[in-house]
Image (cartoon, rainbow, N blue to C red):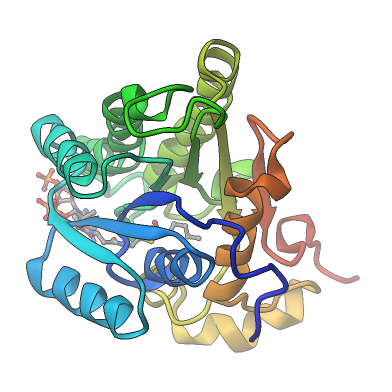
Length: 269
Ligand code: HXC
């Protein structure tokens, strides 16, 4: 689908996207690139990074891939530094890397719970922490007339209510949303950096959907969730463009729910 945004809304911007080699993250990279940004992708698997970078460069988008795990502070630091070395500045950080599986609270080990918090919550904070000095107004490579940079963290809607077999991810994403608000307050005030999030609903053709939604969900779910329909990765990327471009220049500290209204859904009676 064609973008409703002008092709230059992110012209000259440099975006670092964690977990950007596939799924929603890759679509964000693609749309950011199509709207003028240069892309750095952080991911754990070299082969996934290489394919993503090849696909982006094939359509004329400047792209580079750096291996790293957001659970390791030294990786986060190295990837942020490499991105700066490569492009000379950083304007946007997208925290998209996440881990997930279905497990009942009774069966989930504390280490399983911790693993997902380490990836989603601590990984998000660590990336924000490492990138801060490059996003500040007047940071190296940034024009003195530019505002501070932007951070966007991908959350979920699970924790807005409660979700079966997702206690670890619900807790992790609640922490991500809290981090978004707190950084928006501190870094918005001190450094003119905008910090926002997106909470996607079920999005088709993603690892999250294939792991979390067994096949019967797509058919049966419609009966008891009046608003249930799958979103597209494109929907999330358009929201990401809005929040990170000047279109969203007065939006700070919000997590935008992009789920077609599903979380409001109630069974018909
Ligand atoms: C129960 C599990 C488990 C499972 C792992 N664990 N998988 N417990 N059921 N299916 C437990 C392990 O037993 C272990 O605890 C602990 O978690 C760590 O497991 P490892 O296998 O060592 O972890 P690791 O290899 O680092 O893998 C991390 C991972 C994995 C999160 C488990 O799935 C991963 O790397 N995922 C990244 C990609 C991904 O999931 N993307 C989807 C994001 S979708 P013990 O106690 O045994 O040591 C998404 C959408 C959210 O986030 C919202 C949707 C609506």
